Amino acid sequence: PDLPAFDGIDGYQFLWAIVIGLLGAALGTAIILSSRRLVPVVASRRVLFSALAGAVVACVAIAFAQLTDRGADQVLFSGEAALAPLIEDAGSWTVGALVILVVGKGLAYTVSLASFRGGPTFPAMFIGAAGGLALSHLPGLPPIAGVAMGIGAMAVAILRLPMTAVLLPGPSLQAGSAGLLPLIIVSVVGARGATARFTPVPAAESAPGGPSPS
Image 1 (cartoon, rainbow, N blue to C red):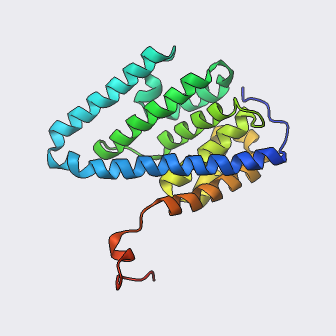
Image 2 (tube, rainbow, N blue to C red):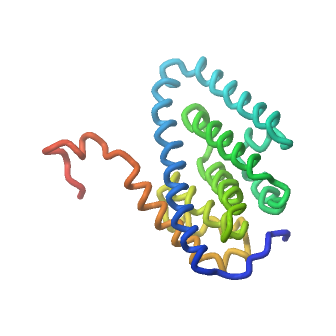
């Protein structure tokens, strides 16, 4: 009920949609590739390294709480419960706190993907929303537009499902998402294309004589 106001779309916001799509693709790809590199390490001694992974997440959350005036719960959990308060209280967050939140949540998310059970969707949405809010402190980007585009870009970078990523901001922003749909689509399409570009081709497909796409 307390979403920041959105007055309408202009050309500058479409430029921001492209920028946010590229940034979301870069961050999402970095998280996915880093977590995949950690999977075999954790699997070699699962009990020990899962415990260490939990300690790393705890340390990141404590560091976030010490560096900002926010609680460690912003980093510790999936972000499902914290997403709405983050958007509604956007004006109370500083750029520095939002950047630290994106970095801390991204590190915790990377470690958790490699070590624990749980879904990938809500952490991606939360990181995208926080990143969009941080960018909204720059000229030409309303906070609610940054949130919507950030959620869509991060969602498609992690899930690789463009239609789902276009629709995901809707449940979070409710009625406010309808006017933002063109911006969300541009950011999602840009992020999907950039993600495909950033993701290395598997060796079996890139080697001469390897299997060709069906």
